[in-house]
Length: 132
Image (cartoon, rainbow, N blue to C red; front, side, top):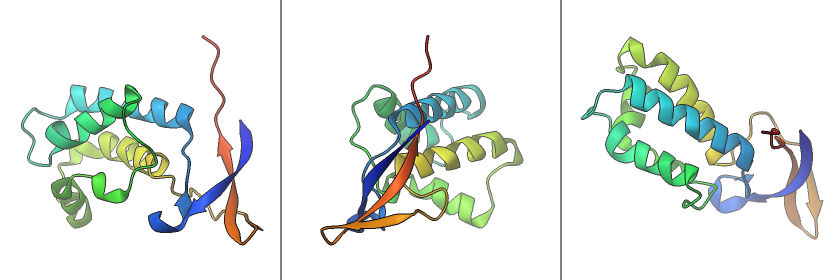
């Protein structure tokens, strides 16, 4: 693990302007695995039709990051908000929530900010690549 001073992005709700590439890859692979294993094809929440292609683009390195929160399928966001997702989606929801925090550059805890030339920055933890 290492720390880095990263600029905060005013246009993205003061989230970090960078994401932890190691963590987002790890979390995207987990979400992909859970979707393919546990979420039925043709689900009414857009998980296979909207979320899975986004996750696969991230795994392939073909998606600009950080994401804005509007990338999340609306039907899934609504069902989560209303608490109407089936109980067997719990593992998916935990993995997907952590993935969104990472992919959007959101803070997991209140960041320690610094001002540099009038710009807002904060310290961010980054995972290190694991040796193969």
